Length: 356
Image (cartoon, rainbow, N blue to C red; front, side, top):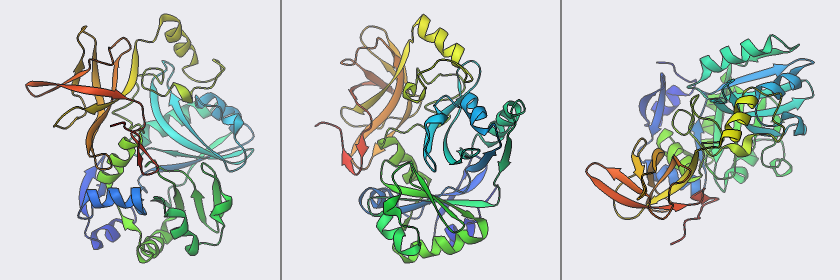
């Protein structure tokens, strides 16, 4: 299995390691629940060095990304970040990613680890028509520091004033690239550093009281925040219109990959939608469980699990658009149990948004 530069640091901290898409990664450091609550109430950190950092540079870098991404790259200010889907020509989601504007001809793209090879291949096949280059920053590590006390805990360790860096913007601290982004629904940063500086930074953060967190807490946090997981909540066989990411599509319906297919789908009528669910009663909602209503409409849970913050079973699901929200039931083993449809997200900034 592949290892991040922090692999030994995880083992030294007592992490339970698992195979995550071919990477040897920590699932927890003893208690997933403790790690989850640390991020919601205080500050925690994750090794996300398995993700891929790509720089797109050149005179036509903006024009290229305008075609590649479904969201509008041209609206970015300097050092601002953009969340977007990257679509195939049929409108299916190849990946979801974050792009930072570093200069008019220089952008930084962070893509998912599980989609690295196909992402690089797709970008390489598309960029040949433009005066731009793709440069993978392979010799980097990435640490996400998340939680309501993330900024105040990190600030003494760096010189750049993070109070002047708004959410979804980035700043430089010498060789450290600090983006005020995250995957937890809390404030925080995602830090990209040269690989040879990662272990020292990790230890500094531990010494400052930051709780190391594994992939288990990362998943429950992002689910509570209503954030998609590639390969479950979206993939190449579903469009953003059907999986709750229509808001990432820019208003013009031209010039980006998949635009024509999305226009045709809108014209024909979108038949699916993403919803949030809370299980009424005892049990756990899981990926791939089937949903039904009293009128024969169906759906499937894309992400589900126990929510430590709300102490409820929650899920996101893609369902028939005509499904009756007052009659949704989930099939768990031999039982059919009622669910309540709720707005996403379930939790944001440490607060449950689920009505009692």
